[in-house]
Image (tube, rainbow over all chains, first blue to last red; front, top):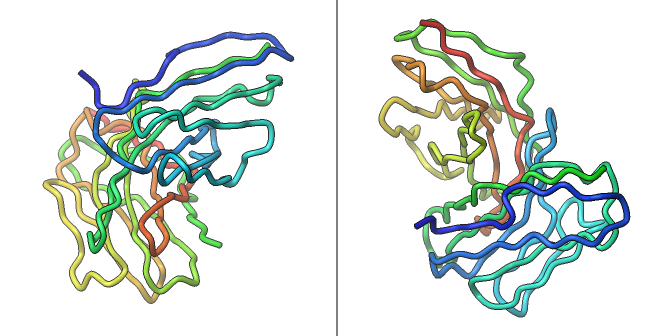
Length: 116
Length: 114
């Protein structure tokens, strides 16, 4: 079974609809992240959470909200979807080992969202 | 603010040859990390290699090595003995001193020719 799962994997929705993308992980990591990928722009950080009570905005948080329901679950919501939110969305997790040389981020398989 | 620059157009390499993918970065943090990820056509993000700003030696992982030139602020990925399965998009990324969130470059497409 995958360590980081995302649901749905593909979604087509209409402008103005509310949509939620879900991320679950079994790695026991404290830190979780949401990125979006657009062609030619790489991945950009939307929101991140270092624990259940810690939520932070990333580079492009406008139009998005998140919820950290538990250590293992981090959801991304689009309250009123618009076409330029069409993108590939990735959830990622990382550990927070003090003194570690690095804490690798593990990515989910991605959710391809199309807003018509 | 951190910035990653990947400006190479699509790269082509012959199978079994080596290829270098360029990455330059900018940051005011003395402590940072540099990562390379591979994204094949299936879409998943695969971690390849990491270099810390204080590491004295260049990182290596199998056929991957990172040519870290701190004064030039460059962190180029070298893939030796290219294989057809290396055809993918490659992203350079940087973490801040807390090794938390990543800033990505725009990516480079690599095509390996048989």
